[in-house]
Length: 272
Image 1: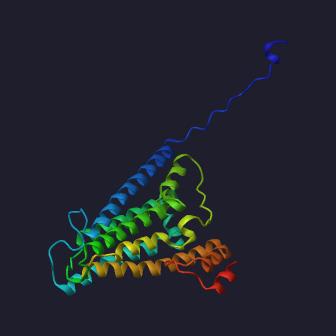
Image 2: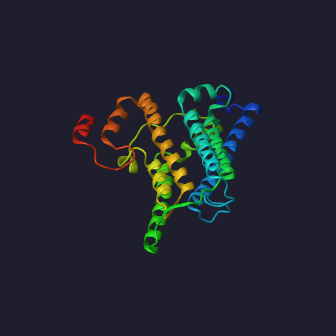
């Protein structure tokens, strides 16, 4: 048999990406990584800021101004963060926004803008160090401090239970980088989410309210962010019902929202 009669094997080479597409993938991945690193630094500073721990300027540090003006400025700074979070997290805004921003960078942009809002809050916050209540016992002081640290830990761990990298935009950018389509994560109930529907927000509430010394400034911060959490979780759940329908409705009837108290039997049975 001659060589010409032998079947030939053709090895297909992967298609070479256009230079513009390669650049876009690298740029989006770098943008997502930079946004995440900024967020992580801001989160660490936020922990120190709220607790007056190990940061150059905590929530009660700085030049004290007039009480009325300080309250107005601080409330406005909290509202800036809350409004940004509320608007940019809505599906309708995301559909509009991704006409201008690559979908793979949408979540990272959300993270970036939220981080910048917190940077503005740190910078412009006007301290109100008037002490409203304080514990005198060293045991109680350390106990509340430890509880606040546990709240921050709970919030961080909760982000990993579902998908930390998806929550903060890294997964979206990575899938674009490797040329795979983004697929939303399926709804699943695991770990802390079997106890409450929003363990991440519960962690924030514990961290903010576990204060050995509650000043007027910290009270305003805690109250405003509590209001944001209550309103934000309701809007988020409306979106989740739209996405997952009866599956999420059953989960709502079975598991409490923020505080891990038992649900009424009537609601639990109706959710089965």
